[in-house]
Amino acid sequence: DYKFWRTQPVTKFDEKIDDEGPIDSCKTPDDIPDSPYPLLKEFEWDTMDLSNPDVIKEIFDLLYANYVEDSDSTFRFNYPPRFLDWALRAPDFRPDWHIGVRVAGTRKLVAFISGIPVRLRVRNKTIPSAEINFLCIHKKLRSKRLAPLLIKEVTRRVNKQGIWQALYTAGVVLPKPVSTCRYYHRSLNWTKLNEVGFSPLPPGMTKAKMIAKYKLPSITSIPGLRLMRRDDIGQVYDLLVAYLNKFELAPVFNKEELLHWLMHDYGTESVSNDENDKNRVVWAYVVENADGVITDLVSFYTLPSTVIGNPMHDNLVAAYQFYYASTAGLALPRTHPECTALLKNRLLVLFNDALILAKNLGFDVFNALTLLDNPLFLDDLKFGAGDGYLNYYLFNYKAFPIDGGYREDGKL
Ligand code: YNC
Ligand code: MG
Image (cartoon, rainbow, N blue to C red):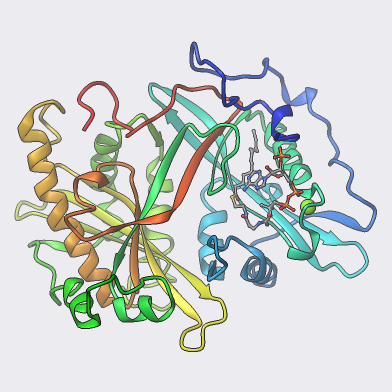
């Protein structure tokens, strides 16, 4: 019955959308209360200072034991501290959008929610927004209606900055997804995936056959494929903007933001651009042709999961597909038959190379969603449909459903 969500400016399940735009009437930051929502007296709000590694470690510890699990509690996301630093201290982040709840007496961190600023393009409108993530409540404090308080408090702090819209994703179904994607998984280390219970042996198959099915060459095939450097940013920016322009929902980055998301701090004076650095969280590669033109971008980030109660393995390391772009077919109209053929052929080799790179870096599985142009290559590259779905939500913005995600005509 969504007692809380019913009170919020979100699209209802049965609502008929007539036009796109904000749901609430227009307010100003002065209309918003200056002080935090009251908590039960044993708890207190805290602004988490992520420049302090001890504070990141506290958030890490909370998430490590209490964050998202799969449906049968075999795996729990295990975001490394370096990942939290990357995800939460993005350009122009606001420290007061990193919100903790502590036990008043002991100062123990028992809940967290975060926001970062993002500009979102929904079709032809660009909306200054917050992206809300890492909502987590300690297992001992579940089902006490604390989540609605965290959500209202982050909303208050975002509204105080004159921002009225937000994007968030969740596995759970709430009113009402603007889009839903399915997770797909491509085995890189089938034996380990089988041992942790992620990949059962299909009937009539042998282990040897499964290993052979997922075998990959040891070296990549595309000439000019190499790790991205910071000085590629001009070309990579233009390429990604042109590519994302095809889709109905996309972030709008400036070059500084894109450098953060693709390069973190690699290749700066303080951190080298070593592909094998154990602290790395994101890998970005480009294809540079003989004329020095960058024709393709592919990237992924690392997200380990704790394997709960398995005698052989305690960790599963997944590479998650991140931003990519290709010039293949980009100059042709989307409905032109050559357009899809060119793009499909290119993405097949590009992502086969990405799988090889990820395999060589030691990842166990490569995950992707059914977004962007992924449906062109997921099956051919032996990705399998997973159990999980990811729902995309907009706060205080009604929009026509986004299905498949292409703008204009020529849906695949
Ligand atoms: C969820 N994931 O429906 P109703 S994703 C939003 N996102 O409300 P209580 C959620 N709402 O149905 P618990 C939600 N999960 O009565 C549950 N809810 O209207 C709703 N899990 O609250 C739920 N992290 O405190 C119900 O539930 C109400 O103690 C119940 O806490 C929930 O980060 C939770 O999956 C998820 O830590 C914190 O189970 C807890 O169970 C937990 O009684 C494991 O809450 C970790 C986990 C969620 C990951 C994520 C995105 C969060 C988006 C939040 C919404 C943001 C809106 C925009 C705000 C800014 C606006 C501006 C401008
Ligand atoms: Mg609760």
